[in-house]
Length: 304
Image (cartoon, rainbow, N blue to C red; front, side):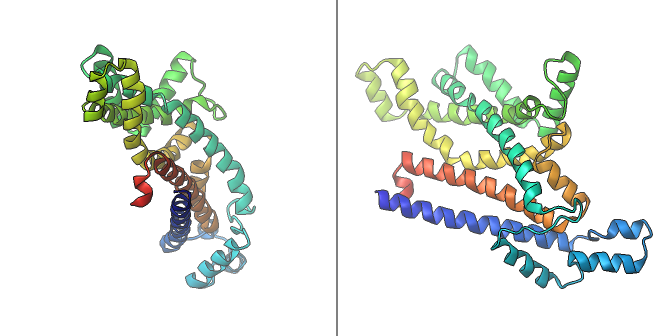
C-alpha cells in the first residue's frame, strides 16, 4: 500500500510540475502575442528611436520569440526568472515577498472558510430544520455573488461602521471577501453529501443498532461525506487563487494578484511569466495536497 501511495504521489508530482511549466510558458507566449512591449511607454513619450532600440536590445526584446523562450527556460534551471523591466529588479525577489502575502491571505481565508464543513454537517443531518433553511439561503446568495460585488459590500460595510479596516495593509477584509463564498460553497457541498450519507444502508443499519445520533452524524456520516468534499477541493483551491486577483486589486493588498496586474499594465514579459508560474505552483500544490488526502482516506483512488 505504501509503495502504491508513493507511486501515486510521484505521478501527481510530475503532472503538477508539467502543469506549472505549461502555464508559465503559455503566459510568456501570450504576452509576446499581445500588441506592444515593455518599450511602448517610451514610444508614447516620444523618446528617440535609438534609445528605444537600445532598451529593446538590453531587455532582449529584439530577439526572436523562440530564442527568448529558450533563454527563459534555460534560466529556470538556474532558478533565474529574469529581470523585471518595470521595477528593474530580479523577478524572483519581487515574487518572494508578494507570494508570501498571497499565501498568508489564502491560508487565513481557507482557515475561515472551513467553518462551512461543520455547518454543512448540521444542515445536511437536519435538512428541514430552521438552521438549515436559514443557512442554505445565505449560502446560495454568497455562492452566486461575484467576488467584486462581495468585496465592494465589505468595503462599504467597513467604511460605514469602522468594524473592518479598509487600510491596504490590513488582512481581515480581503480574507473575509475570499472566505465567505468559499465557506458557502463548502457548506452546500458538505450538506448534500451528508444528506446522501444519512440514507446510506450502513448508516441506516448503524442507527437500527442503537448508535447515538451525534455519533452517526459527526463520525460516520461526516467522515463518509468528507470524501466528496475532498474530491472537489482542487476546484475550491483554484477558486481561492483566481478570486484573490480581484480582491487584492480592490483592497490594495500587496499580493501576487496586484503584482500580476502591474506586470500586465507594464507589459513586463518576465514578471508576467513569473507571476503565472507562481500562481500555477500554488494551485498545483493545493491540488497535490488534496489528491494525497483523498488517497489516504480512500485507497480506491490509488488503485484507479
